[in-house]
Image (cartoon, rainbow, N blue to C red; front, side):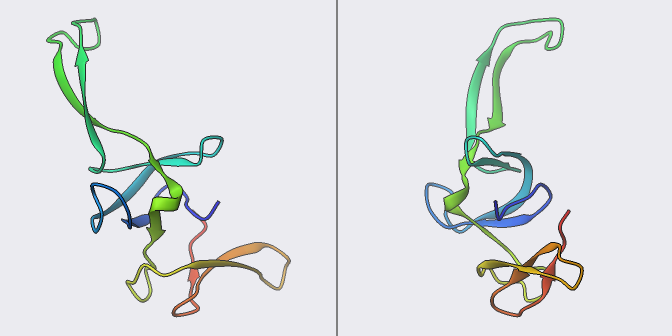
Length: 105
């Protein structure tokens, strides 16, 4: 999977196209990710011990990863990601535009 938690991503398709944000969580089995402040939905919740008030809460919904592009911290553009092996045989994520290694974090 080319997207990891903590990456800054650009939405390339859908209602939030052109906006960017930070990945909060990735669901590998469903190929989806939650991006901070994007794809907001409204949930009607009852009062509970966790939420005393209840009411309508806005929260982020998952976005399919094919609609996201990683923004390279080096060049600042949303290009593609390639995976290459370093000298020790580990896979590293690499920007296709500026050829800079992107953190694995």
